[in-house]
Length: 235
Image 1 (cartoon, helix red, strand yellow):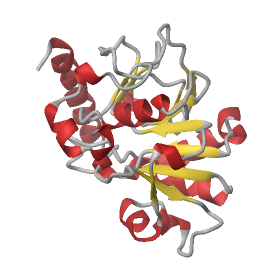
Image 2 (cartoon, one colour):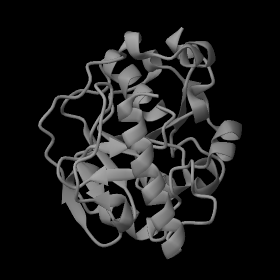
Image 3 (cartoon, one colour):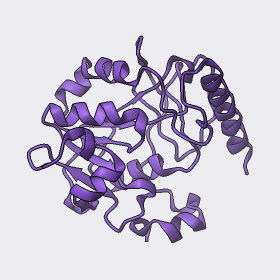
């Protein structure tokens, strides 16, 4: 584990501890994207933002914390791409088209529901993405540096779509989090990490200004052997 990895893990541990202590996430939050209290209010606040209102195509993570975001996207008629958990299939994204779904949006927008009703697609079959919504463990209020749960899937999802030309520097990136996940300090980051443009809690919207460009795509020299083995799209 590198010094950056250790520093990230220290931040994760601290945030998870605070969330559990405050009752802001269910017990057992350690190791996960926090399913935080107030996620519906944060999703509603996101929906008030211009980046959301302009977006016709949204890519979102499959975690419970962002379920209200995914349901709202479908209700508003947006085309939704949701990552297959662990990017485990050759086509690593679910296509959720609200005009084609035959089950309630609240069901279709879950990982188990999507696996039963939504086709999987690869980058070659996808439309350009207008807005990315990601889950987070911690976000720096200073510059939008994001720390996830440590598996690296969100970074790889964006990298795959960037290489395909579906995500550019103009694609907005937002996250919904509990206020305890929004930190005033600078956070550690690696070259392959992306930052967010909008960090949204149930109480506020923070517009983040990152001083660095997003990664240009997949950094193959940084891929772990297990990622190459377990993620078909990387092969």
